Image (cartoon, rainbow, N blue to C red; front, side, top):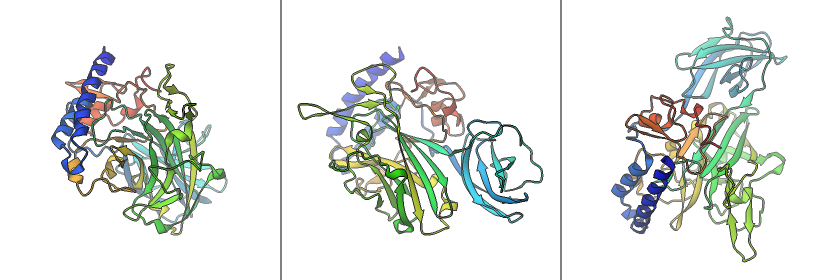
Length: 426
């Protein structure tokens, strides 16, 4: 029944969007009242928390006294690798015995604790657990968690980024699966950071480009960027670029910050079918378990970028808050960008607001940043989640752990990403 109602709703939305688009080609004449009405109609949530920042990550720091014999580094972990298969390395800092250091890290808001590890010359881990919100200093005098048994391999901290390609208009689905990417970061040394970007899924047939902007620094702070084995998302370097037309691996954003140039056409990173009649077919990748002429399963595409900075002070303070993984697509006649909520009004490579950002101010997000390495996104046809009159709907609809509850009140259900409806996710 829900799917039938949703199909009817999409018909209403599409009709309204046609009228909306034909009256809003000129940005100066953007109809904010109509746009807001459409978002409320389609979003299927009573109200969006007006104070919502749409963030599932907090930036914290901790002062660590590495009082462990022969210690060589300290790591901040999401879980205890002696007891968990999915422990992630959130930050790393070189250490000398009994010399206090301060470590910055990004931690999921749904977490209660962090695990601080002192690693010695023999790669032995001594781990203490601490509540991240109240812990300002820590040492290893009294290990208070499991420190023996099977040590499971640590993974780099991974965050999923899920986009709806309709901004600035309302989405017809709010599935956040038009583009799905994941991003991890791993410090190599004081000057080199490895960013691993994976293109996971495409639920759209529109051409879409992407870049990774590093906020808060200037492009000239990057000395070099190279990929593992020379790999690229761009399979055909001779193909005409139409959204991000420059093919340099590092670009300079409008504010002077660096942008790692990921791709100009996400579909080309997977597969585009060239037809005999001269047309091309763009498929939707990894968004449906059901067979269909428009859907295709395809291995996710991963590229690792090694970013060499010329300043050794940048990496220790570089958190996920500073990483702006954005997409760009043609909206009407110009390339628009979709950023996570923190950078919603950022114009990285294109000036598309024409100085009228205020006309697009609202508390909706077209990009989600989900700090969970096992996250499962919705299949085509399913919304991420709704919440009306105390009832939760959609893919993440477990009461007290529902996406819609979190959108309605940012202090609730911030662990929603752990509770998918298994029949609705890819």
